Image 1 (tube, rainbow, N blue to C red):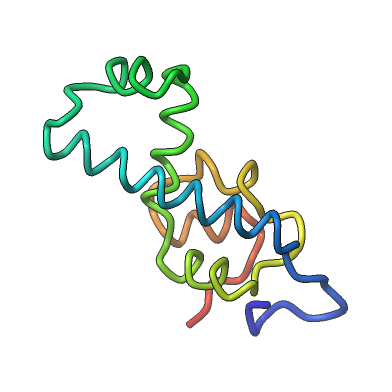
Image 2: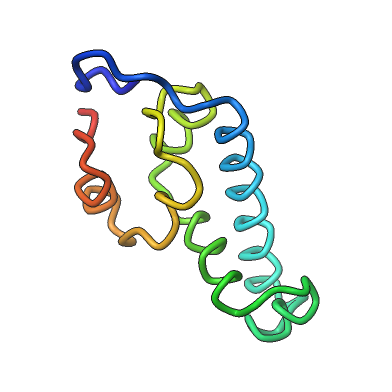
Length: 107
C-alpha cells in the first residue's frame, strides 16, 4: 500500500493487478503506434484491434499514468478496487490523478 494509507486495507487482487498491467502495456504500445505513425489515428487503431474508439481512448489514457501509480500496481501496492476500470480516464496531471483516486500522493 502507499505508505500514507492507514488502517486495514487489502491490496489489489493479483488477477486485477495483472489485467491492469497488461492494459497499461497495451495502451503504451498503442500510443507508440500512433506517435510513430504506424497507425494514422484512433479510428484506424480501433479497426485494426477490433475495438471501439472509446475503448482505445480508455486504454490510451493508461499510458499517461503517474509512474508511481504504475510502480505501485506492479508491486501489488494499490488498494483493492483500484484496478483497470478505476484507473482509466484519469486527469492528465499526475497530482490530479492521485486526487481523483482519493489516494495521498507520495512525497
